[in-house]
Image (cartoon, rainbow, N blue to C red; front, side):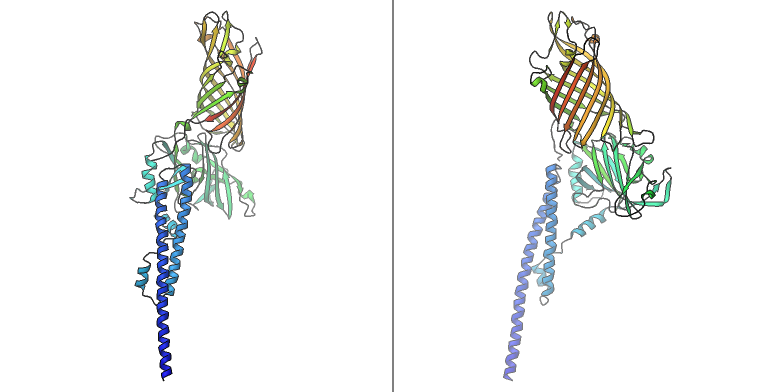
Length: 557
């Protein structure tokens, strides 16, 4: 009996000691997890604040930083969820401890997962109306509340406090694409709607160039195949509302995932207005800078933009002078080495203004043309070495009239793009142009000293441009020009009863970094041949220089 009592006493003692040990271990481990959770959560809050601050200055540097911060934020959210999962495991093991004790050791709620955050964001968006985003550049899309609700989301704060207060950008208009998986009917060659043939929208890629939607590619799903449709002719930004419903995309190819007869797709057409809408902002129906859009895109938080509703992207671009005016500074190698009397240092400035940037199809082919597309005013200044910029007149007679053209120190005029012909998939373009400009040349008259002779030059020609890559290309111009000195120097003592006819050849190779065409280097060879019956004189210029912008700026609050 005594032995039995001793055994029972030892059994109850072991139970008590074991229960106390379990209590001590659970409390210690859970409190450690609570401390870890608090550290992760505190760091996550700091990352959120840093992300909000970084969004206030949209620059290339801030974009790189923002990408890193978003990755860090995702990592800390995952760490919080992992810590909470460990706490749940301890909670399930420590069953003999009261729930209030465990709650006091770990007073934290379950953190949201990445999927929960994405789902909650999607549910907040209005299904009936398109979700609106600011397409600030090719890499940044920020959501905007289209209903005017008083929400406190980070997106709305960024939009209202930063983007809408920036004076240096122009809001051109809105591009709207369908919801992912939206169904539409095909059309046939006769532009008749085929109600029984339907496709679902997947994505659209657009290249905006010289005032037109120059290249459009639409990816759709049809009968288990992914089909690509393209345009033949560009659609003008300025008259998109009129031409979109009359423009159709043609079948191009399919993704190599299914083995089907492609002849079934060759006669299918997609109406452009079904998959793309552009509405210009009142007061800003102008031509934006060249831009490439790949839609839909994820916003800066990694959320899909057209998952629950059509998505609208607001096209905003900087309109600083350095985005519009092209400046060039260069030297002439022939003058540098004493082989010619060309300007040693030369400066050029030009800006393109669009007149009728409307593409038209050439018959039924994929070739297209634009008539009177643009006007480009320009100015050119040449700095000569001392005395080399003077044309000599002996007894009022200029021996070589071509010297007046070679030693011009100031030229102001404009070039008109009369007719441009191209095909969107070919690297070569051809255009016919006309020019008119005003010129000044310094002449040393042995009887009256130095005077500035004025001339009006007019002419025309043809130019070809080709690109090896997007940032490396070749331009060639051939033109015939007349320089009229007689009509603009009536009081001069120099005999100017003549015009100087010149054939000008110009070949140029250029290179610029990707996405920065205003920072480029170029090499250019120019020849001027006198075409009158009096002589066969010519002169040559070999120029190497730099095309640059006036200055760089940052979009800030």
